[in-house]
Length: 103
Image (cartoon, rainbow, N blue to C red; front, side, top):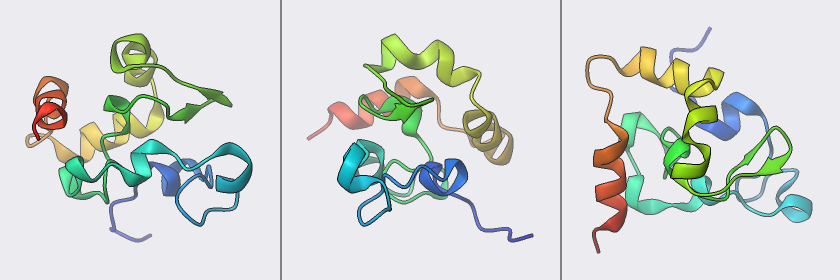
């Protein structure tokens, strides 16, 4: 098994990253192109902090804002995996939201 940290689209196999197999029909996922969070938790763009990004596709449904989706994200297997892999350096959501608000 590879020790490479997976981005959400690799972990979930959704195919919504740029050039992905479902990007044409479902649109490119905003987590895959959000550059302000590039490198967080070792991911590409917001690929390892997708719970912060509005408009991600989870369980076949486009999700809303962080506030609307966070409780379900906390139950997500990918979120739990990232949190486990990054402890004790897991970046708290409040700090990620602050980073998104910076210009």
